[in-house]
Image 1: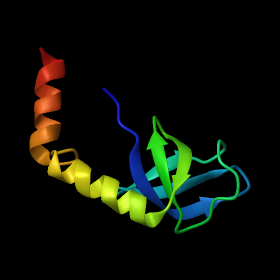
Image 2: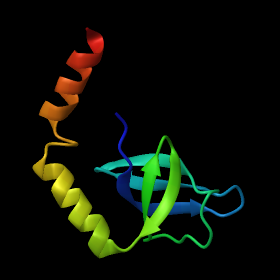
Image 3: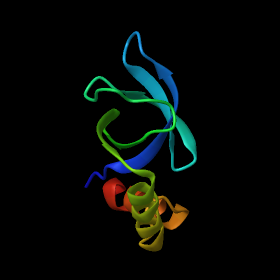
Image 4: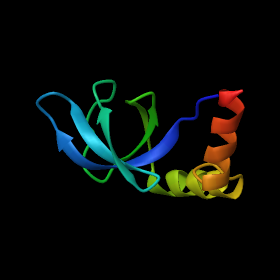
Length: 87
């Protein structure tokens, strides 16, 4: 299963429509070509390396809070996922 995770744009290269986002605390390269008018500070949903939609900060924070409550992004969730795929 893949999840689209809310991420905040922290750097932008308008020339090639790429940038970097804060993705659960890690700075990750992202392709922004699917979205118009994105700016540093915007919140986006990232899936498979592409920003696929914009959302407001309130919705982003609510989603991240929910994901943390269910364990997404935690060490236990990551380890469980890797154990399952290693079988």
